Image (cartoon, one colour):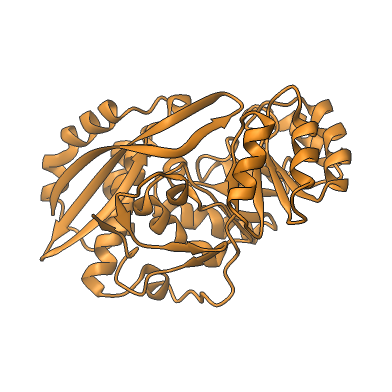
Length: 337
């Protein structure tokens, strides 16, 4: 294989605010793997919360590049188990970008989409949410009116969270899903859930800090709304930790380490009776197209990253009023423009 990488600064269409940060530009790192005239792509975005920057992604890839190019690539699973995981188990964002590229390359060499290689059916995929990020309430209202959508994710973690939801509810009767990004306490979550349920909210995502599994057991037992793990589910080992603390898990490729482990995590979660969701980190269509291949394993989806950008750098999976349209071309279907 031949390894290349690219840096981009993805400009957001609107400032993207969550409980702990706000950004107008999303730096991203693209990895490409080429073999026999085909090129696969993968992506990892900068994330300060997880200590990830384009600089350390590049340094990590450059250190491994000679070994990757010598590796006798056969399947993504072999490459992940025998090479990527042993080398990069503590740097999952980089592992994810490389694993996505390996899966994309494999599918392109087979000239089949990954979902087809895995014998998944795509006739009943979950709709993707559209995210309304934290801002002044008036701005959040404008964002919602700008994008009529069948289901919304509302970012919370302010001093006036209930007021935000009440105000947005005036504008639409579509379902809301709440993401507090670790900003609430157990007591807040339990009390907020009572109000939010009456406001048409379906579930609450990651209300408490990632390591508070015991406190989340209390929340799960008392909350009138289901609770979904995000920051609390990073690796394959975390799925079992979530059984008693959450009703479901939001798996993201960059946290998990790529398509290969994410696919295993979603499969295990379903077997354990947890609801499953595939999410994103405001990636371009490179990362979104990779995550979209796993939609047949999911009850919920949050794959709006590319449509939150002012301009995409790739083409691949698309969203049509919440419906994710999977490419029929090989691999993930992603192509860098």
